[in-house]
Amino acid sequence: MQTTPDLVAAARAELFARLIYNDEGDEDARRALEHIERVVQVVGTHRQQAILWLRHLLNHEKVDPHVLVAFGFDSRLVDRADTLRMCPRESLRDYAKRLAVCQDSDVLSLAVAALDDRISQGIDDQPGTVAGYEEVRRILKRAADALAKRRLAEQPSAGGATDDRPTAPALRGALMALVEHTEGVQDAMMRMTTDPRNAPWKIRERLSFADLDLLVMSIHDLMQVVGALVIDMTARKTEDTSEAKGALFDAAKKGVPLSQAMETIARTIARRLRDSSEAYGGEGHEEGKIH
Image (tube, rainbow, N blue to C red; front, side, top):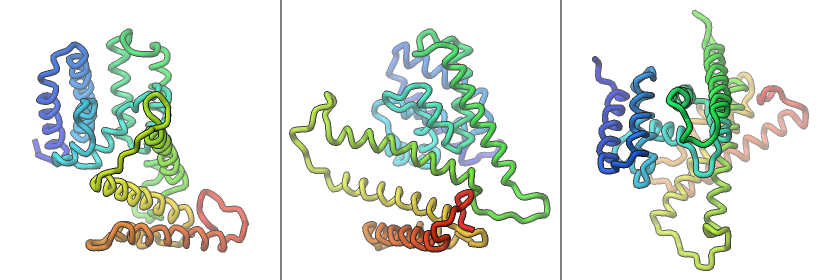
């Protein structure tokens, strides 16, 4: 068998998971491991297997995405695994709604496979009813099928050329995924301003320099995503957006402070919005593109 990065990632993630859960010894840990082992057997690719084992690792209280990236796992795989996890206080239906707009076929396929295993094994110990799980499975399966159809429709015809910019449905999906993440922002704001009893914090400690660096990097990354969406949503039919979006991701070149890079991105966003507003002078636009 040919060794690929995904195969190596799956093998490493499985090894780490078995090592870190080796001392748990309780019934819940054993059943969680058996669940992962069953689902791994039915998924289609090593990439999906890697995401499953990484998700299992992230369920451990001492493991977070930063730890896994520090151990050398691809941040994109870690991000998919983190998306696949249920968030604190998230209902099964809210979980399905969030994943339904994630625009990642691996995440949707894995969520469906995991639900299939839960249903087939019996879910008496799980919150919700069998009917509830089956309804959530239908939501995720419809989203997976719709995504597959869109991807197929976006492929160029044989021997033909196609506009490689995202289609309006793809842009809308990316926008909805961003909107879904605002719920996490709201939760973070609540935790920063109130204690677990929902009372205002009486003592506030300053963030460490490492915390501040993480904050600035996160804001910078979010601005890049927003900038790319703005560029695509305001693009003219004949415009090649690759250079404009490339400039966003090149803004933070080596030696340039992130604050300066964020200023460049902010100016780009403002200019695009201003120019697009002037371009159609209050007239309507169709499918998220300027005509």
